[in-house]
Image 1: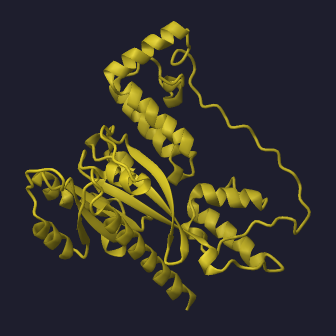
Image 2 (image 1 turned 90 degrees about the vertical axis):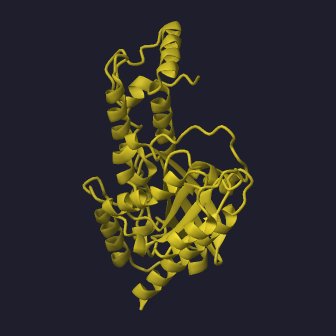
Image 3 (image 1 turned 180 degrees about the horizontal axis):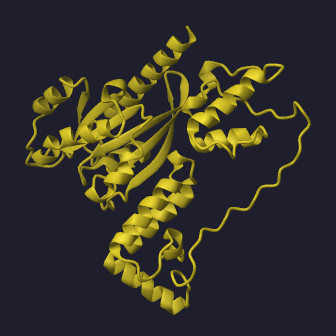
Length: 333
């Protein structure tokens, strides 16, 4: 077991209750998630801490190891260590060569802050993403002489893709199969929100697909709701051998809309997963009809043998990029 201070990481004492652990995890996850400008590695550590402490057996084993190591994790004041302050070096005017993107709205908070910092622009008084974008646009407008722009084909486009659906339908396994070309037999249920990036070349453009794999468990309702906005695509997953997971797709549509995501404004692909198993309860025609009436595209998939995975995700990414480029083109008219 890793020797991380899991209690201190979540700001907990060793006597913390299950509810306190959940509450602390929600707070820490929202603060450190990459989509909120946090550090991906810190987010993974926080997720691991919750995984260990939320299960009575793994928590007991962890507590025993702390006693053996005489660790003070969870026994003293809990406060996050501040990252070391970076030394600012003064640069002569015009020496900064950081390229300001033509569409900063598509960048994450972390990326916006990084660009502003590299340009030496104050941003500590900015509390919203829109303020960071506005400050960057103002600099771009006032910068003289204008810097050469990158060609459209060389600019990296960031798209945000969500995967939603009932627990254990194989959402994480579908993403794993697409990104790594392999199937994980024993996959631990997603803790809250999982995050990953896949770089692709689509329509002769560099694309960075940001996956947000949302846990389907009820305990993570509040955490999920924070990550629906500003998405370009949705992977809606159910299990073909379990009719209830298909019926629950309307519940996931409802949650997405109530969390600020208009499904008519993004691309949605529905995956009927686990087609390699026997005892199918939802036919391909029934699922396809349900998806088509809503303007979605349907695919039979199997994360186990890879069937339909590339077709489904390639279609989603291509559609999302086409929509993105169409919107950008209308803005430039």
